[in-house]
Length: 584
Image (tube, rainbow, N blue to C red; front, top):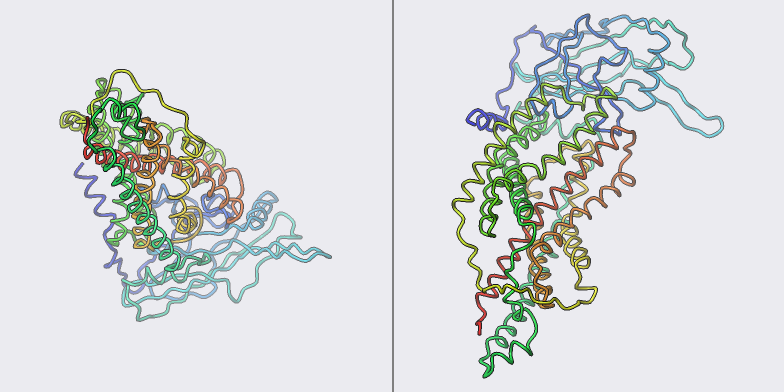
């Protein structure tokens, strides 16, 4: 446990010191991966292409986050020394066979790019050049870059920036060549001194990205969302307070014959003997609340760490590592909340409840990951995790996540008080009258899911562009505001929908409160379909499987989290109104 906490703290250690070099000292350039430009998660080992490679490939030691990110860094054959320029140095000579030429042509036609890493700085460029266009005649020319020019900037004894160009050299056409093809690859290195500080090179890296920049601070959209949220919250509070005030005045009026009141009255008071009737399937109900609470704690922790500047843009996979470790450490939250609520609801088989909490998300995640990882392994992608990483993740869950779930469940069970319902529950449940369609469960799910989704719809594009695109998300302050907005809207809508349900004399609010707001996950998945087909250029089996597989898991996490918020908001509201009601 202590080691994990130390690792988590080290993730945010800002690289303000950095590596220093002596004049003439060797600077190692790593080759990392290649892949189609428009498929961010379809990446392959650089040395799978018939390009210059050493006799023995030496892989770099990677962090957990880098492996999860698909990085597979290996030492390159480029020879660089600090502050020593080179001009048209020979990298290697290759003899390409027919299959090698076809493999390169296919890669260039798919717009393959490469990624190198130098002093933790990514360097990206295209494998070749595709010149396609025209109608009559149609032009289709495929060329390979055989020369790379590296521009490196330094301040004192530290490297500040690195990029690669192909200036001054024309690509080699692969259209009408015959095998075997003799090639000579060359490279140049130019060093330039700069006054820029090492501490600011992350900002420069964001500003000079190889990929197109589309993310901007969208204050107008955020202000618009905040205004809508304040109006919605104000509307719900004012309307419900006025309605409740009238309800309290009417229900608490002294009647001469209380029996006549029970027979003639209607509304939420008449079901006071049923409203706290415990829901069916209590074990899975409490498991949902436990895992939902864990995801809320996880999201809060990630955002807080981001606001504290613990994730650097040039640190590959730092957020992935933090998410894995935080998920394991917050397992105690799921165990505690589920065990505590399960005991309050009169549950007895708490061992089964703990097992259910541990499996309700991890089992679907494992099944989905198994499919995606199998496809990646079959296609030879670096997205397929090595068996050592799989064993490490399993050990983290078995040695940290599961034990903390059990410990949290034991504490939750032992510290649970009685449910202490304001009203007694009769043995025989009351008959539920029919309701119009606009008060049915599907209508509530439509409203309860759409309104929270509308509050985050603008920010959702930027999140998708980061997860499934090439963007670097750094607007964590705005993300925190949107997160608070989402929780506020979810709580207000759940309270309003629960009131309308109780006013219809339907006391089955327990499960409906979860599904009404949890249906936001369905709207997010519909948006994912729109994003994939209309806002991205993703294609191919691997990218499609990963996109939809992991998107389904994300939507499921939204269902659990927002369903939990909705339930606890509804429970708080129901306790409030029935505590303030005078019972006859």
